[in-house]
Length: 267
Image (cartoon, rainbow, N blue to C red; front, side, top):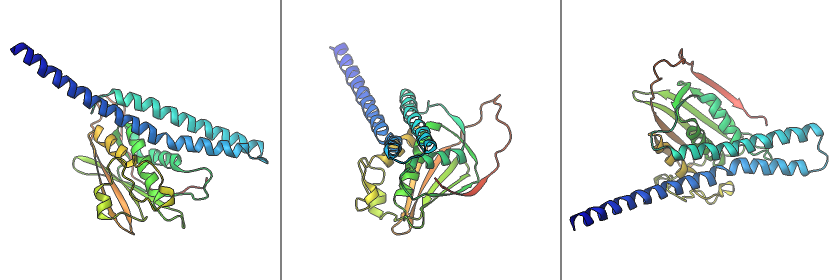
């Protein structure tokens, strides 16, 4: 009887582990479904442009190149997310990441080719590099920058401000906009699943999974995220990344210099 009870307890514990694993897989499904939207939208837009009459051969070729890049982005998201999902929390690969390059890449993934609005980027990167899982940080920044552009005035062009610095035990990254902001009640549920905060904004259609996915990826890497917002003035998301020491024997040398610049996107 004692052994039967022991086996029953083991089965209950195993069932809980399976339920937890299913929840994790479901979360990754949401991330895939949400984050593939940008490259697919870009592919569709450029494909429609190619179908139009009167295009020069050089224009068509450039659009084909951009379709190929977006296809590669979509395949990369699927491949890297599958690799990331296989790793347990804290076991995802860590790379040395140049923030300026990654932020510009994230902004390029957000821009819509058929839009006349070209977001402006302001960088103040006192900490020029961080050590983190590159796939995760790219998806996190892409989602945060997408929100910053989406909820900012379109005239003049929306400006996204990205800052970084090092504090005692964390690398800090801030993504700020001067958009419509959020109320206290909206801030309280910003990271909730299927939470759509601005249903009255025409560009804000979506499934309400962007910030939910961001928080999942942040926490899976042992980091933290907070948000401060003032309605009518703008929003600032703050990432706190754990400082990961450079491995002994690494060929990484020198101290990267801070990066400050204004970048205007011209298409």
